[in-house]
Length: 194
Image (tube, rainbow, N blue to C red; front, side):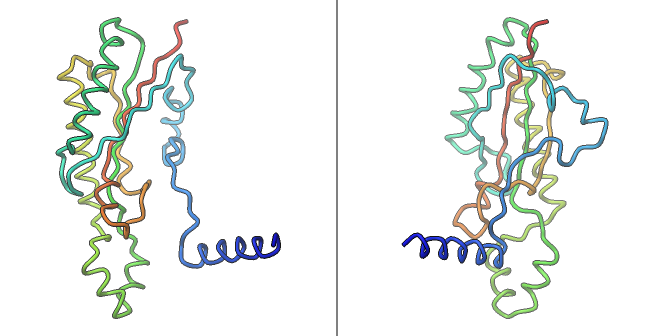
């Protein structure tokens, strides 16, 4: 029985590698930053507290309008941040924007070379424009940043970043995954008092 389980596990691993699966997507703050950003205290600081809030998601892949659940969650974030603002604590709010997957040119060319692939591309909308993703990401992040400023968080306490489609959470052929991949992560970093 153990031999059969091992064979199935090995087969699954080989199949996932062959079809492009088996990749682990995660956010690595040091992965795509230049050397000056590597000294950013957010990436390697010493913190009293790090609060990672629920993801904020939007109503469509190109919208900057939060869905109802995310509007509620954003208000909860404001409630959580308010004591730090009132106490003039040493903190930073980091807002990281994500969008649907960026265009994968080699994959698209391979897809277009087959009738089925070309048809799939035309109906799935899983392929997106890199420039459009970047613009949507910037608008989304700036809108959330402005919401924090409207809730008395000083602009110099807010750091923003757009990861565009580099860190998807969902496979784009899964139902509403394209919309779910368009999201914003909000994290509060409270520095240790020295």
